[in-house]
Length: 248
Image (cartoon, one colour):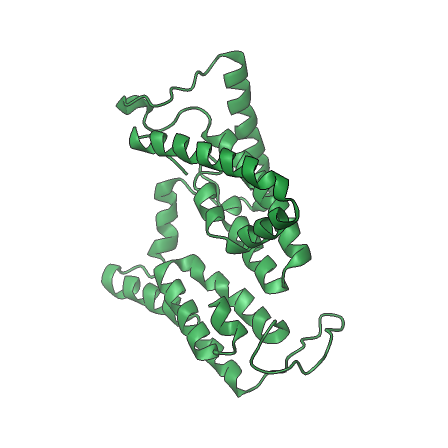
């Protein structure tokens, strides 16, 4: 979607956004960066109407091709309509979240709950009240090893630091996309495991990785140590997954 939008192919960009909406209801959030790319760029299809944005004034004026953006929500509308006709509840995808123990708290309370859960994991491990059972194939231990909240919290902190870099160095559309991608799971935590799924959600936020790549290009000495940590972490998580533990 981002590539098509930057090249001014708005029909394709809107269609890809619609497909994302049909795949997952949170795909509708792509409409925000799509609009920002249209109004503020960067774009390669035509020069901006204003050389520099002034007080949030858009650099690109609306033209007839902006009508293509109306296609973007069609995927979500079609998906909800299917549930309405097939199951009698058009909002079934939203109501179904309670079966996965999700509840809306807002980002601030969600972050506070994550801090508490991560701190409890650290305290239990440090005091010996909870000993992580790595690679244990027992069914009882397959749901957790005692450090999921702590790892997810650490990854969230790293993602937030990268988000600051994205907001400072990359176009606004990229920063908004990354911010929304973090705020959604943070605002709807899981009971007992607030950041469950956060690592896999953050992994899809490509602007964070763009910034990290640019940062490593300026700090080449850290590239090899980071690669070693990444490889070790990948091996550990692969072993955990292979022994029926929940990963991400």
